[in-house]
Image 1 (cartoon, rainbow, N blue to C red):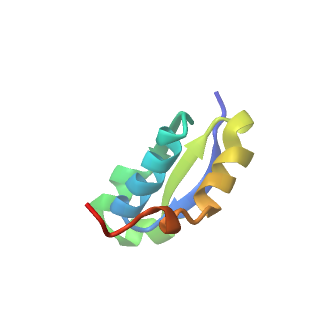
Image 2: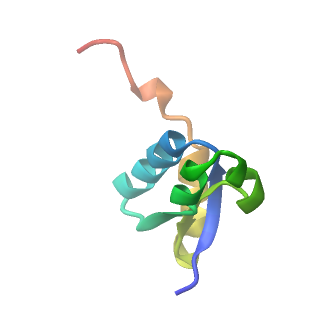
Length: 78
């Protein structure tokens, strides 16, 4: 299956947060080149970062989810 890259990251933690957001919305996704980039940060430049990839039919929705700012839904109360 061909996958489409919807976002790239230099840090594994940021990539996993974004992947979690998509998975919470029911979008199947995976990270490409994550382990290579973790081996040496200079590889990130060479390979274009950690790639968050989804199926082509989910790409548009995934981009919209990642662009959405949900911070107003989080409150400081318990």
